[in-house]
Length: 362
Image (cartoon, rainbow, N blue to C red; front, top):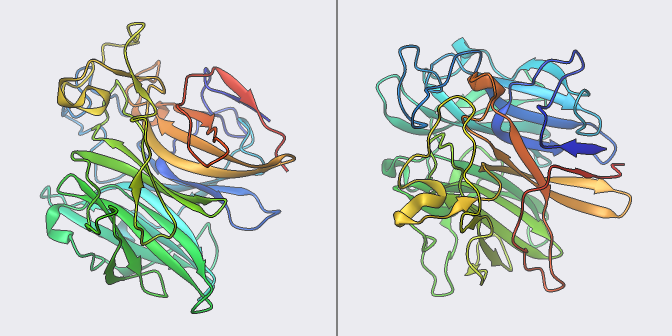
């Protein structure tokens, strides 16, 4: 399978798939890949900064669907639209972002979380729905998860599931941002609520990671090492953001910063081309704290896909390339995919731009 970052990802009918800031995964070793993502529709993005408002609220509307796409091998042209995970009228009113789904072996349910902002502009944390299949339809079970830092304006998040040999059960964790800081909490056995148990996010035992003004987290495990990745806030920012890495021996820490700094924010060598007037948002993404760096991925982190290949598991980093659709349509914003490269001790190497790469997916 060749992944081509210079072309849009297409469905079986040759149409651009409208799926962003979601989770992409296989739930069984021989099964297909499922993408639970936000469908932003055919509205035109603002031509200025990413968070500029337009008359039709493009990017901030109440009618964004949580769509489910299915592919046997992640290739462009293979994606099949399986429907909406949950009907708009069956979920709390609001603008949805970053839907993530996981399978719960404890209950046999598929559990879908999403972040949402109320019509009044209040960050309401996370709603949860469950279904017996990954394509749903999902049924709402909680309008607001009892996370510890709910009052901090909870935003981007990721869910991570891990087997616990002590209890003999599977444990789930949520890594999320609130008040511009990131933290991790353990979830109940049904993956619907927080137990209130927080991770040690530093070697000293603090409950918050040290970096400020961060969002878009991802959490995964490789060869016994747990990874937490996130970058500086990028509200649909054209310039993209970076990848800050922390590692730990367990989901609850203690977490340690990977040396070497950001993996994707680098000194500029070229001026990014804006196809229809989008401009970098000052102070966001790789431009945080008056930096002049640019994102070599030209995107904001979305998810890390675990892909089974003939040579083992590839960890494919994916990011949303906001405001970079050639036709200016929000739902056509492309993504950037690239395999992560690890050293012998598990350190993730800096990433770079590649036009395409090939994997022997099995």
